[in-house]
Image (tube, rainbow, N blue to C red):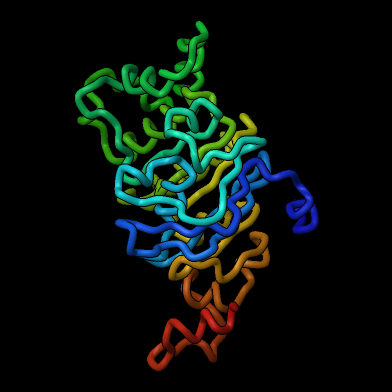
Length: 271
């Protein structure tokens, strides 16, 4: 999708100038604004501690469990304002988060974990959707024991499958490649792309592997020290010299030496 089309597309998720504070003292997000157009994949990149996971927790209503709160701004999902809603209300509205570290229930089976993802539903099509998950992740169908015995890659597949069971309009993915082998990372991202195209599910992707994230995404934002310092289409960010240098391991020849370069300089260039 072109930049013009992305900018004119109606956002399914709109984060408007939010600030997040923990313990009434520690400010983590400082005026973050992000739009996620319906049907697209948007990625949020940045170094550790930039506030990426905090952004997802603000969206999903999970800040209160860590003594955090949105102190300014608002978050809208479709026509609803959700930053004042409970996590259950947010899931029922069609937004599901796959959290960092998978967070599957290890002493439950694969089937039981998948059914847990459908707890907000009242229809009779859950078994059909389990088969749909198995079409995307055939390896899970072979695993009949407890989920705690799955490999890291299989647990990540189960976490994404559990999200699909909620029949979401949008999925937030927090570090889906964490701890996976390069081969499994490639497989997981291929499935994420396939789910987006076939199911039309909108996705916001937080990821340390910038190469895979940008290649999967239609649009991207870069977060540093709680602020958005750069955004653009996939092509714009992949071709940006600063992004190549600091996130993709490339850049032009004159940028090869980082010895005397401090992080505030690149933020100043981007701002």
